[in-house]
Amino acid sequence: MLYTLSVLVRPKDGVLDTQGRAVMSTLREMGNHSVVDVSVGKFIRLTLESKDEESAVEAAKAMCRDLLCNEMIETFTIKVGDVSK
Amino acid sequence: MLYTLSVLVRPKDGVLDTQGRAVMSTLREMGNHSVVDVSVGKFIRLTLESKDEESAVEAAKAMCRDLLCNEMIETFTIKVGDVSK
Image 1 (cartoon, helix red, strand yellow):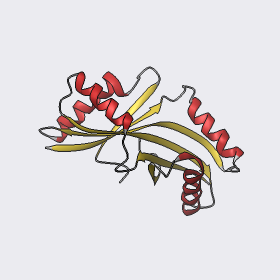
Image 2 (spheres, helix red, strand yellow):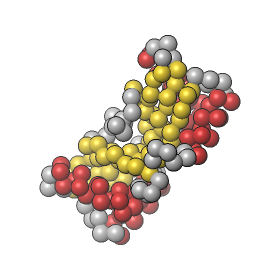
Image 3 (cartoon, helix red, strand yellow):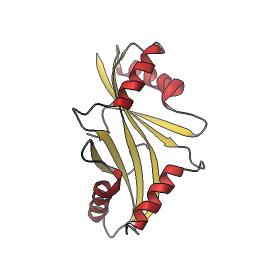
Image 4 (tube, chains in turn orange, brown):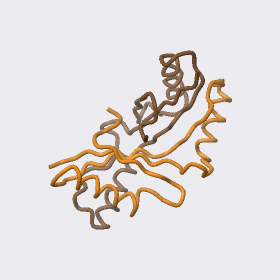
């Protein structure tokens, strides 16, 4: 069966989020003074074949650890389905 | 009041997702043959000051159009709260 999973990769709390800082300062320069914080990460949508949902999530976790997330400086969350829908 | 919004930016359907393709072929080379499709986009978490939720979302939409999303090749979704929690 096919499963769609949303992987959200974010900078770990406490790690300098250079992209987030750059976006925030640009937004402010553009007049968006209401912005207090910006964090920039990756949204990876995986579609994979699996016997059940649990195995699909386990497979996605392994892919995060092997490739999609640098766990020294990033953290990941996996949600079943497409969070952008 | 402070609002946290999750902005999910994805390649438009029909636009070649080069990052997604690259990640998929690498995952397969690493033995993950169950992977059918991969889409790679941005997860931007915005924290901003606003009088109410509706205005916060409107402000975030304007930021997406001005800076965060290239609407020629990308599409964005805004969710209230942090979808990675």
